[in-house]
Image (cartoon, rainbow over all chains, first blue to last red; front, side, top):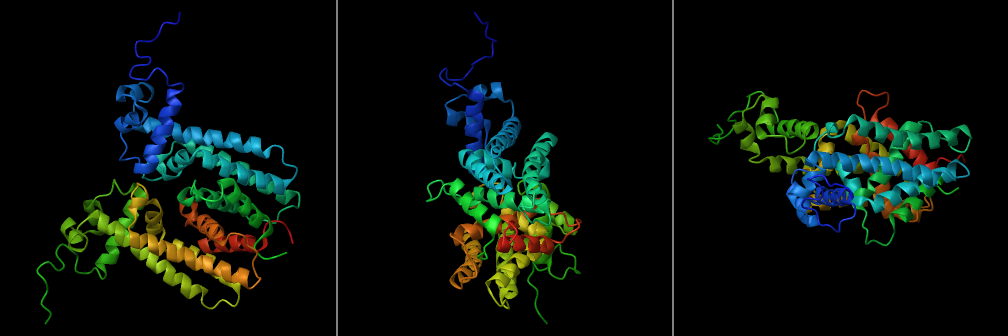
Length: 204
Length: 204
């Protein structure tokens, strides 16, 4: 029989399967709705039917919850993107896959995305060095797609770094206005963007 | 001789020409660097060599300073954009002028822009109804350019509302990464974006 640590499970409903993930999800919703400053460990716990001590067992501070949200979303979005782009036959298909994967991931993780972009309401020091490195890995992944396209003669792009930022901007901005109840899914909107990125608005 | 109100000029250096604008500029820099929550009226005053009473004379609360920044940047950017787009001969030139004007205005007002987009670190209720209306007027102005282009047969765009949001996203995202000391001006970066928006990345 496994011997439980004296702290294990304290204040946590016995039916919760992945309490750490549940806390991150609930906290992301609170940060996203009310802002980081206005959210308390108590509020996060209350939303989950947990006690503050139950949350504290996994994350002793609000800041650690914030960091766990940001780090997990950065890690998971790169994994999702790489697996989505893997099978693409050429650079245009790879770019289309990237854009669609980003939108899909955003739609499935809206609160966490909002936390990633809004930070803690402060400046760049909201993020750790590891998080900044992870963000760069993601934009490097996109830039590599653009550069492969240029090298193969499929794309004409003067400044791939700035254009990668433009693509991420148009996609990430969706977190400001996307309506989950709207007519189009995020992926459908993204497909429309890809069409214009590839072909431009001037008829060919 | 003009009779001064007993409060006039209290705590304000006599050399300051436009103290209201100076307060907004200084406050925008503070909000942008340290975040809204972490900024105090005292800190804003200190940056200007004013007393807190001097700032208080013009803006009794931090929230009023925030609102004045957001409202003025929204008003001024629409005026700048309309005057920049006015002389364009056709829809592609008009879109190019819009994108360039937005970037120019952003570069000249980076702190205020950052305040506009980061809000007070909370949710949508950071903005007043008038501010939301002013933001809509600006995106409607862009959407009208896109729709004129479609009507004239110059543009092929399936969803002009979503594409207007995409353009604003790619431009506004610059406030996250643009380096004023970098090689390119914001307008030069924007010109590169326009080229791709008009022609796409696939060679014609």
